[in-house]
Length: 446
Image 1 (cartoon, helix red, strand yellow):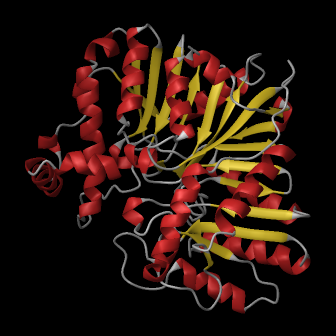
Image 2 (cartoon, rainbow, N blue to C red; image 1 turned 180 degrees about the horizontal axis):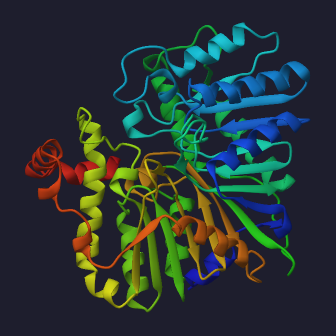
């Protein structure tokens, strides 16, 4: 019988020069690097994000893309966003112009158009979205969990903290572009939102079902490469749905083979059962586990008590409730320092980090929130980095230090607020949810 370790080692890999893998540490640096790369592009720009927002930062990025296209009409530029998210306003916002309207306006004002493809992962947004990440510019991959709007790009005063890796690797870039073209853009369910006419969701329901079935079988295609002692190994992964999801399987294997330490970041504390199980097993076998999660006030759904409460504002409280229950169940491990929980909070900024480090030898960069929704509903991807000779150890440690800079260590579950301390509107919502046991259902889609 093949062991988990052997399965893990036998993943196909691409060779990466460690000097050509760079970590950025701020949202502002990410924005600057992205714009610089767009301006310098000579052959292709493929941007994939949950959304490209109709705000100052979103318009800046789209303006830069269009300028590059007008200057060099032969430049291959394609953008992919979630089909549903592009055609509605922000949660809680008044009805009005959508992101798709912006794409159309830009197209009509320029000689050389840029397609913005809407990818419908499911018939309804609540049951799955395009959560694939990665910006390919020439032979460079700029990978982050961030979407493209003011807060993710720190356009004004506030920022949403994420991870940002820049990899110069033609084979990786080619593989990601092939996937975007073959598995998404060429599918009949995918339509250009910048063109004057598109079908409505109801008209393409059959094609959407076919797209999801196709994506569930898809993977990044590339010729595996041998890794020298001077290189690190990369494995791009993609997954959607619960069955035969290679990304989910790899996450579980990664946690299961940890010997010394696990470092996990997630913005929404709601582990899938298999992840929670592997974390528990790791602690029991003596692995030091560190979990970094945003404070409820650093959640992107948080509504200040001074503002009008909306149902969506209950999410941060539900996530904190999950965290408090987890901390209480693991109080002994917290006391023995086998489990460290860090809460991130920096002024009125928000937290969107996700990823896993194991034994300073393996790192997963991903857009997956490591929650049940990511596990079974959304289309997710990741790049697994194997660094057997620890070329990136210093860079890993510097990124971890940067992440922990604005965190508070939880020494006891009592440091986390209990429901009785929440604003009355949040208390009422939580009582309603738990009374009808809807929290079990909600955990699967949040």
